[in-house]
Image 1 (tube, helix red, strand yellow):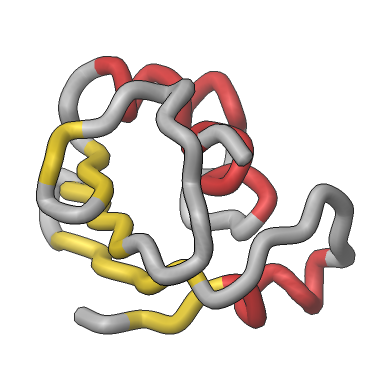
Image 2: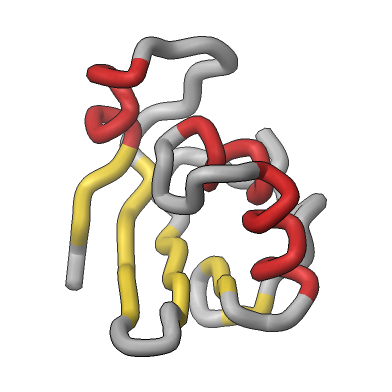
Length: 80
């Protein structure tokens, strides 16, 4: 699954266009490397998002194409 789509589905970032822009501007990294929106995400990857006031680090636990709002937090676990 693409990074921008994963960020949107898990509701880490609310809109896919915002997720795409964040990835394009170097705000999102996967496994310690700056990632493009098209980076393929797999289970076990560590995603870090640098928000202006904080940093958010999660580990990918599951990947689903379609899910309900309540299931979004089950797709990752927060590390920091």
